[in-house]
Image 1 (tube, rainbow, N blue to C red):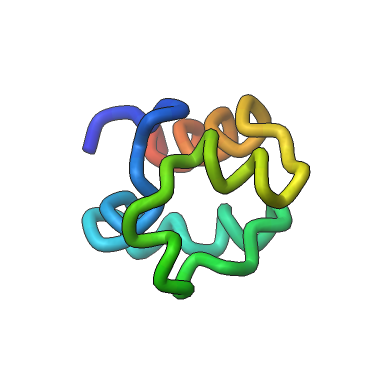
Image 2 (image 1 turned 45 degrees about the vertical axis):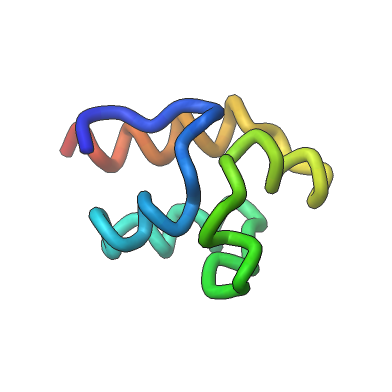
Length: 66
């Protein structure tokens, strides 16, 4: 996976890049293992949890770039 965006599905991100799980948790997304995460985009999950998708996406892509 090169970059994540608002339409990226959380379950796919974690399957392809398990090292990104901590970025989700550090940014307040504690439900990475829940069934909804298997089909929910970053944007959808952030809306449900009242989080900034832009902040989370930035942090995820920063770690992917390392």
